[in-house]
Length: 84
Figure 1 (spheres, rainbow, N blue to C red):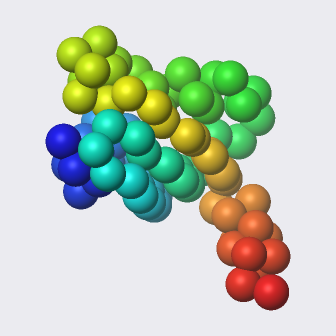
Figure 2 (cartoon, one colour):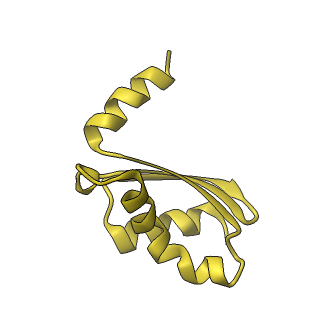
Figure 3 (tube, one colour):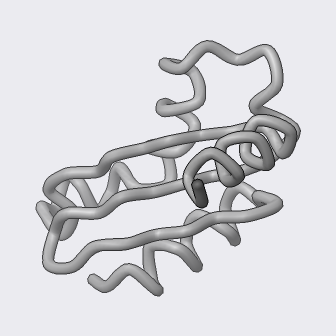
């Protein structure tokens, strides 16, 4: 499994505004951006991202996933902070 496949899977299952996936082998970093994250706890956001990946996690195709989920407003703010 590669990062492109993980990204396509998340995009097709969750219909996110933006999804960025980095990683190789079985370790991935996911940045997900969508308005549906507004008002959700960090745990709920992560559960939402994990759900379409669970089959691959159980098969050990994916071993570790680091998740950051943002609303579009949070992402715009954090993206600016990252570019400083």
